[in-house]
Length: 294
Image (tube, rainbow, N blue to C red; front, side, top):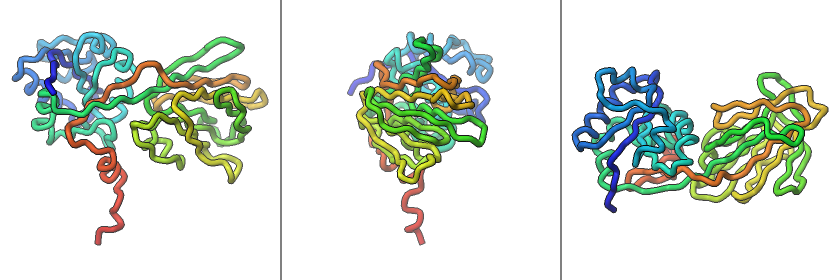
């Protein structure tokens, strides 16, 4: 495979520990190859003596052939919601904790990043969710999510009551702390903590995970990826439940509102070094098999 990356965007959160060293290492590597580099504007304080252009994540998505996101999965989630609509491929360098999405470690940069630039990579597409809050027949809130959309009772120790519809078919009325709707990408995140299944990222499916439901028989449901999900917040609720996308973007619903979820038309293109394995990531990040070690 012959790569044609000529303009590279570097994206990340400038306040993250150890980021300065990684950014400078990447810049040196890219400059050695005479590649044009555009830095996200919030990285400017890390490379104040640089002549590289600074731009917003939106501007970078429109201008580059490849984006390298430096940070944890949170950094990549934030960038993904912007970059997906431009069909810009994304490569993740991990400066966070688990790193299911940012899979190149700092000590692997000098070997794996040049290999990707030379066309030695695996390409993977991930779908996003479109979330809308409807009130009185109008859309009053709209956001995207790569991992999950969570409707919950917020900080109060109370349950909310809602009705769930899938493709306009009534599923159940539920009293719970909330509901997590997750993509396969998000199945190793908050959904997993809530008791949801791990789904391979190539699956065309969503999982719906009740949060502390007031019914022992209430279990996660896996549905087809093109399903239309509607969560009706019953009018008798007293709580204004938050609707949170990827744990980063917050909207507020009111009693009587409906939350509509469906697959976004655009997808995120992730690049991985050759030999990348989802199952190896699970073994490493989730510490599978530790109990077998003497």
